[in-house]
Structure formats: structure tokens, C-alpha cells
Amino acid sequence: MSAGGEAVRTRRVPVETSQGAYEVTIGRGLTFRLGAMIRERFGAPRIGVISDSTVAALYRERLSASLADAGLDVRFFDFPAGEAQKTFETVGAALDFLARERFTRSDIVLAFGGGVPGDLAGFAAAVYLRGVRFLQVPTTLLAAVDSSVGGKTGVDLPQGKNLAGAFWQPSAVYCDPDLLRTLPDDRIAEGYAEMIKHGMIADEAYLRRLEALVPCAEMEEMIARSVEIKASFVAADTRDTGLRQILNFGHTFGHAIEKVSDYSVSHGAAVAIGMMMACRAADRLGLSESSVTARLEALLRLYRLPTETAYGAEELAGAALSDKKRSGETIQFVFPIRAGAAALVPVPAADIPRVFRSGFR
Ligand code: NAD
Ligand code: GLY
Image (cartoon, rainbow, N blue to C red; front, top):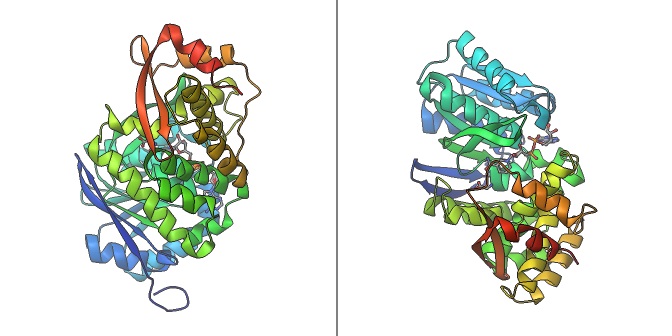
């Protein structure tokens, strides 16, 4: 039942991975029934909720009531909101919490929040007692369509973002779009950047629906389609050794922008600009249909996402070349072929400055 007592209509998206299968359940008002859903699916484990301060202040009461109503024993741990907290120190504090509260192998960690609590709680679950089950309950659009699915968990190091972690799949993902209502517009736009990415790499019809502007009533369906697209890449290549890297469309350019800006440019904004740069470069290198660039630009503007960077090509290329995650002497770029299809192209280090230059207008 929702707060008003009516039944919650849900959509379910299956996710198959080489580490096991699970479902993403999406439904407005689902948080009010979450305790009952967990009870039905997992029995009565103890639940350790890991969240950030903002999400806890907004929604802890709602979640807590739902879990308590189902008779579940729940403990809460939260840390100050923000990317700066995605560190080993915070994971250490979360592990300390789980141990202090005597969580066992049969208990469950519940990641409640955006990508930061999701990545961090997932990592804590991956290493606590050498691995306990965890659930993702995303509260940002970015987490709903991207980070809560696929099992990439981890933390940042002083040397760079997401440099330590583990592949550890959630046992289930529960997404309540009603929780997204309190997100500021720029955070919503960051989620749309990832949805546009999904359309660009895999589904032209989805792109057309985004171009028609998503009415509120269709949000669940749009989240479900994005999750399906992400899940198809995760199923094909869970450990990210090949095809899954297509999900990094816009990310090589985007990561360089994030890094050079000392992370003052948000991930979503950087990916939006990065996708534009990838389109321009692919067009100039003769890899894609030239209409793709104008189409993407119009769509990003529609969702109030940026399309240009003030940083220079040489500076950005330098940041990409010093990226610890590049493999050997090449960097994998994702270039569009046409709207709805993209390809991985390894670019030798010596050509990186030229590719970055061709990403500018
Ligand atoms: P986030 O979790 O920091 O959330 C952004 C801000 O929104 C925070 O201040 C948070 O407190 C606030 N917030 C969350 N839910 C809210 C709500 N419902 N109402 C109001 N405010 C709310 O960050 P994010 O943007 O969700 O995710 C970014 C992180 O995700 C990065 O660390 C990135 O590396 C990671 N990521 C991981 C994957 C993956 O596959 N694991 C994929 C993409 C991004
Ligand atoms: N966000 C990219 C991935 O999960 O592979």
C-alpha cells in the first residue's frame, strides 16, 4: 500500500550478470511498501541502512516506518553528503558500524541514496565478512538509471575517482520515482545526461521520446527503459572488459573535464560536454553520420545541459593521458556511428591530442 493506502503499480526489469541475476523494481510510492517487499523476497534479515545526511534527513522516517511495519530489525548509518566522503575512511566507519551492530552473513546492507551512498555501501557489503547481500534504493535520477545497476562499487582515492572497488551485484534494486521530487533541477539534468547517453548508444526510438520531453507520467517507463539498456551491456560483459565500456560514451572527454576542473564541473555536465566532443570528433574522423552532432546538441539544450567547455584541448588531452585507468599505450574511445549505435575505438596515446582537438566546434 502507498501512503494513501492504494496498491503500488510496479515495473520489473530483470538484470542477468555473470555474478548472478536480480530484479529492478520501479514504482511510485514503493518506499511505503518496501518493508513488505523485502520481507516477501528475503524473509526477515536484519537491515543495515547506509545513507548520506541529506537523504537521511528527507526520507529516513519514511523508510524506517516501512521497514518497522514489516517487523524488520533496522539499524542506520549515515555520513555527510557529497563526493568528498566517498573514501576509505567512510567505508571504514561503515564497516565499524556493521561490526558494532553485529551484522552477520545472513543480514542485508541497504544502500539508500544517490551514487555516492550506493557505491560506498556496495563496497562495504562486498568486503564485510568477505561479502554480504545488499540492496540498492536509489534516490537520484542518476542512481536510478545508472549507478544502482551493474555492481560497480567503490571509493575515490586522492589520485582519482573510483580507483578502488569491487564488482559486487545487489540482490535487488527498488526505485521509487516519488523520492526524486526533492532533487534540485541540476541533479535531475545529470540523470537525463545518462538517459540521453543510453539513447545515443543503443536506442534511437528512446532518443525520440526524450526529444518529445518526458512527461511526469512516463517517468517510470523511461527509467525502466534506461535500466534495460544498461542491463543489456552488463549482461554481455559484467566485468567491463569490452562491450560494457560502450556505457562510457562521453566519459573519456568528460573525465578529463572533471579532472582539470578539480571536480567543480559535475559528472553529468562533464558527460554531456564529453558526448558532444565525441560526436564532433567522430564526425571529423569520418566515423559517424554528421547529423548526430546537431541532434545531440539540441537534445542536451532541451534538458539544460552544457555542450561546451572553456578548457583547452591540450590541457584535457594531458589529463586523459595521465589517467591511471588507461590501458597501456591506448585509450578506448566510444564514438557514435549513428543515433542509437556506438563503437569502441582504441586510440594510440600519440593521437590523443589530435582527437581532443577534433572534439571542439
Ligand atoms: P550523490 O549520491 O552524491 O547525490 C548527489 C546529491 O544529491 C547529494 O548531495 C545527495 O545528498 C543529494 N540527494 C540524493 N537524493 C536526493 C533526493 N531525493 N532529494 C534531494 N537531494 C538528494 O551523487 P549522484 O549524482 O547520485 O552519483 C554520483 C556518484 O555516482 C559518483 O560518485 C559516481 O562515481 C557514481 N557513479 C557510479 C556508477 C556505477 O556504475 N557504480 C555509475 C555512475 C556514477
Ligand atoms: N556507469 C558505467 C558502467 O556501469 O559500466
